[in-house]
Length: 371
Image (cartoon, rainbow, N blue to C red):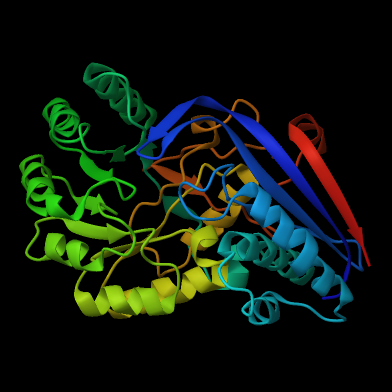
């Protein structure tokens, strides 16, 4: 492929309802939308999931904007031939900045698939036409409110419920949800909120409430604590922030610290990187699934295509569009279907159309680049 130009938009969308985790509360989501134009006139889209503040990771909208605008795009536009793999090889000399890299790589994947007339799922080797999904429930003002919220999601058709937890909001709310809905599958996600001395305490309440999976209980480098939690546990221990590349996954596997892998394209630096990590996890008999970062419909489309690959076997955190924003940037929303599933768009590319009208309304800043 030879690029003719690019557009980098900074957008802001309002969430349907506030989403609270151990990092804080989000009411609006600021993110980057990247459009790459090939010399034929075909375009591909990528989304950068970095947040306004460096809470989930060290990257932010500002740092990602700078890297994409001043490093990645100028180099791509100077090149006579680009593709996702060659871009990642070239960008590897820049340390970190994985979310910025993933925005560019996924836009290139979308563009390559469109030019070949196939969907991103087919381009990556996926085969499923529907993927199983669950819903992530943020920290609520009251336990009773949490139970009601879970009930509404179950009525909507979701089968797997993931509860955000933190010290002071864990044993009691999880116990209440289990008592109200004794047969559902419950996961919990702490987003690194617990000190490493809490291994025994987490094990007690998670076991008592028959939690199926505990995700990222401890800080990202606390591999030993996650290994202690996993040892003999009746639940899976899932790593998210701890796994950012193949060496960190190998360390977690060697330590016995992981029995489930959350793959987020932005966290690991690209769709093809995420696929490689899930493939390695499968060889180690560790199931993988695709996590979400409150993406718009563009990022969600990329995630749904990735989740269609055979390496991903657990329900994914990729809920329907009405779970997220009052107005998305794509024309047709993702709708929850039978069996708690989403349909994989048929293509070409990510298979969704971006609404220029919605983009204009959400736009806060825009930069155009020409060859």
